[in-house]
Image 1 (cartoon, rainbow, N blue to C red):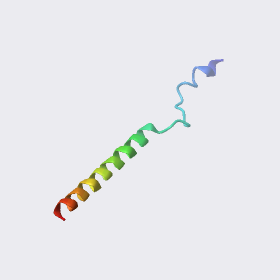
Image 2: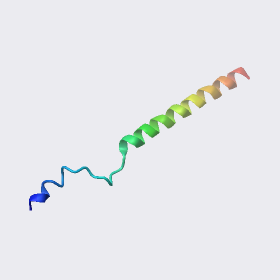
Image 3: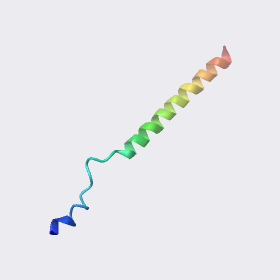
Image 4: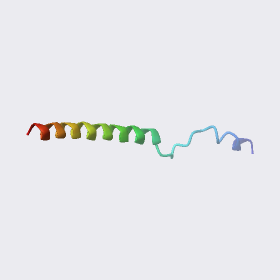
Length: 46
């Protein structure tokens, strides 16, 4: 009965890494934005 209160202190290892997913999504958006801007610049010069 005494161990039930201590279980909430230990963080869950099986959770989704939301922070990592958010950083990955931001990284992908930045890369796509950079390639899109380069593509538009090349289209304007052609």
